Image (cartoon, rainbow, N blue to C red; front, side, top):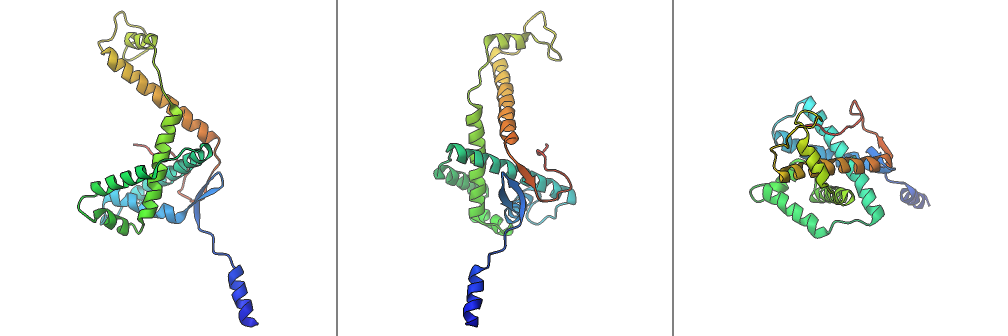
Length: 215
């Protein structure tokens, strides 16, 4: 009878919940995943044998946590609208990472030094591809009118005051510059709208709130 009660208690016990570093709309990001990706980034940033400075480590942690939150945010959006990235595209990206690693086995050795797995990296690659492609889809096609091109060509380089003669900049170059500016503005708008609809809870104390990486 006593043995039965011990077994029953064991079956009813719940596994300890994983430690979280953040929540995105209530969905947790585990500290284990965060730590593994931080080790990978540090490996690439300072090398496998070098010891990072406290400032470098803090910067990498901010970058990784910000990216994880952003990618989870867009992955949730993708699930909501049925947007997916094919498995074949993820495997193609992984193959490219292996090739960039140099000699055979270098990529796997990098994972071992970071104490992470190919499955973890595959998840990260999928989230990154989903984020990049979903943003591009939501941004959509950007157009520039002839009037906008001419106005830009008449504008002075250092201010809005019109010039008497058009800029020497080729028209095609002006078009590319305006398209890039409009895409950037639309991308910022799309990302801002999704962030405004997202509840983010930072649980890891980095000494400050996470913020977009700089430089």
